Amino acid sequence: MRFQQASLHLAATLLLLAACGKPSAALFGFGDDSEWINDATRPITSYNTVTVRTAYALQFLKGAFDTTAIRSASLPFGSGGQVAMHQSQPNEVVLVFSHSALTTDGWGSSTKQVPFLKEWVYTSEAPAALVDAWQPLSNGTGGASADGVVAPSTAGALADAIATFMGGEQVVRMVCVGEGAAGGLALLCGPWAGLRFPMANADVVTFGTPWDGFSSPFAWSFEQLVVVHYLWPFAAPAMGNSTMLAAAQALNPLVTKDVLAGAVVPPNLPPYAPAGLQDPGDMSFDEVYAALGPDASLPAEYQMPDSDCPVMFCKTRPLLKASCLGFDNGTFLGNLPYRILTDDRTDADAIVLWDDESKTAHFLWKYTEESRDWFTDANGIQREGFIEDCENIQAAGVHTDKSDSLTQMTGEVEVHAGFYNQFKSLAINPDRPEDNILLQLSEISGGQAPRRVTCSGFSLGGALSELCGVWASIQWPGVDVLVANQGGPIPGNEEFKLAFQATVGRAYKYVYRMDLVPSTAPFPWYERDPASIWINGSTALLQDRPEWGIGQLSWDDHTCDVWTNTKADPPYIIVGYVPRLYNITRPSIPAWVFNATSSVNGAGLAGVLLPLAALLSLLCLL
Image 1 (tube, rainbow, N blue to C red):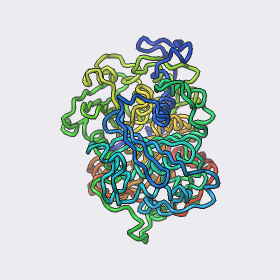
Image 2 (cartoon, rainbow, N blue to C red):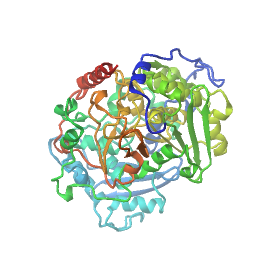
Image 3 (cartoon, rainbow, N blue to C red):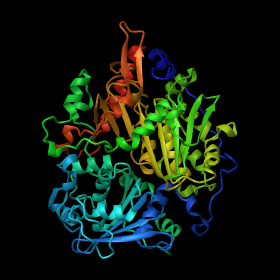
Image 4 (cartoon, helix red, strand yellow):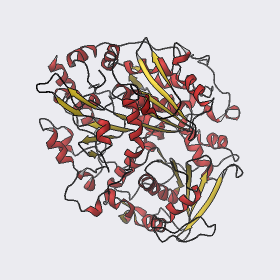
């Protein structure tokens, strides 16, 4: 039953059922009431992951770090510009921008197109002074700098400098940092890094940098290409000493609930689709897909070229293949050590793998298969307590101070009760040591903490992968997290979406044609995490699918491999997610994005009315 779902009538009936009740917060021996008396006695792991991630960037911005433990080099550019490159761990580089001649005064009054986004969204614009200041970094003439970090090539001075600095080591995480006007260079760096280094997560942290002059197409490109971003409205605070703990102490009063939502959502974002297509009504799939793009008449110079390692897909396809096929065939898991976990009460299934070379923990979550899984999928009632429970079992063994916990910053996070029951049976409150996901990871990693975490899954496993991403960000504050799933339902409410954006950033959520499952549960209190990729044949449109009624969607499109419908007359073959993904050679940009404008609360009303319409369609089928 891997590739097909149970009867829609049965699922709709079970949606009315729920598992209620909140588990004890005192799990694995960590009490509910432990708090740190003051900042001086708090270890860095006791701060929430948002503060820790920001503190990591701040210490490099301030030059407040142990120079004996961190490799550094610098790249001067233009007139008064400099990029400081830092490496504290393998496969990662932090870029800190400074520029003595740049100013934010009136920079939004004159804008120009961003050249390196020409093949992405050529209408993306930024302040002209900023684009001009960046241009020497994109120039391909190369040339040696004072400290000899640049090798000439056509890739551009910054790409050459990074390649030389990393010594051939693959970049899997790049953090772009800046303050004030130089923060604008960090804003450009994010999408540049996402395009230049397709295997890497590109993150951005800025302090006191205005968004004036950045167009809506640029904001859309930024959200697509940058994974985690914190656009803090305040200036970078002074630090008491040169430690990451001092950075966290300085940031703690500033990183609050009041500023978080604005920091993790780019200003000037357009709505997810043009107003006339947000509610497709009776329009067919082919009509809507053609209307949303891509633009077939666009000249080749304004399109992404085909690639063997396309942006987004290159780093996610192996994870999606493993989470689809690895539960039945261990050869798809490679030669990495792994453990299979199963909870008999909830029928939860997961695989944890350890890559010692990159210090990466991979978590694969299984699709809907057992009869009890149908109940899990259909259990549409939400419950509180997910964030609190995750914080109470932090892998570091340190209980976060309640006054500045992630819970306090995001509000009342609620998640699908059925999904959480399965997730917690392996990751929060397991019955047996052999099904304790943290314990099993510790055994195969030799007790090492991961530097990177990936969470992936298909169908039910897709929703669990999003819970996994937030959970992993809490267990190992500041760790690099990648979430990729296919055909996954929506796991939580608006506050969960905020928590996801604040801890994981964007997810790579693949939706195939009219697959029904990504539109469940069809209630207005469920909010999709950003951002979906809508597949049709060999085309992958960077577009959240509009919300058709449940009765207009299809079970046939819900398969991750190749499936034959033998009950049909005549039988027919369905080619699902994974084979399609491996045939995609580039992402496609929706045609409407090139002329997009922002809309205050752009999808707000549609975000309520469309799920309600879907619910009414579902009820009509009962």
